[in-house]
Image 1 (cartoon, rainbow, N blue to C red):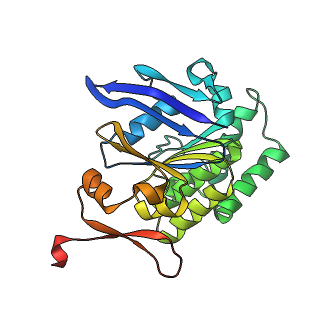
Image 2 (cartoon, one colour):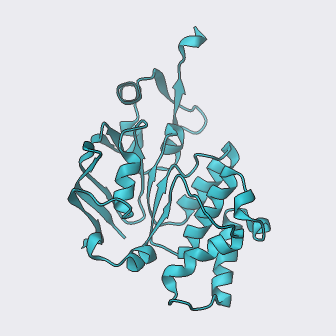
Image 3 (cartoon, rainbow, N blue to C red):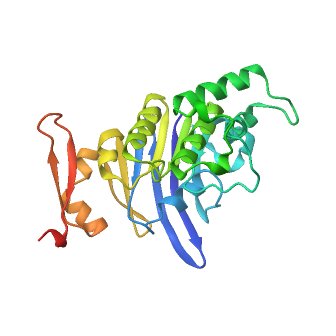
Length: 257
């Protein structure tokens, strides 16, 4: 499945947040969306998964205008793990993941053995099967994030949109979640802060600053000390690991002397 945005413009409170942004996620491509806080990443993603309506531009799934698709059809094809999720009711972990089956079911239809099998597989994939009967509200932020990914896996979608998917996770689970997402073999669009994770997993990146795309391309070509200084206003060096041959970012602090 291919995703495209064409010159998306979004205005909030009379301020232009996203300015004529065009991006693309090709089939099975892992695309990173980079940029500092306030650059427009989350706002752009919200327009893609239809929480915000852009003032101009198009979002296309396999060439089809998403604004003309039903929300049910969208949910069968595109899954979302957003940054913040609040639930007013106290659901069990299993019930939360079962919600991912909703786009594939008729109204008021009961959960089937196949639904429970899919949910069990999703929980096992994110290493949370033992938590299936726990209250979602009692989980840590990182645990909740893994359950929300499991819910999206239960949707069995062809494209994932992730807004800071590793934001609340320790290093072990950051790598685990990114490994899981990468192994799915589907298109992924992920807003990321961690440039080293971007270098490890992404096949293409777009860099946003002040609502505009300022760079795009292969991560090893785009993520340079010069670009990081321009966009994030920090000093660093991008070096190649002697054992793996992979690039990684080393940050400098004035406190280091």
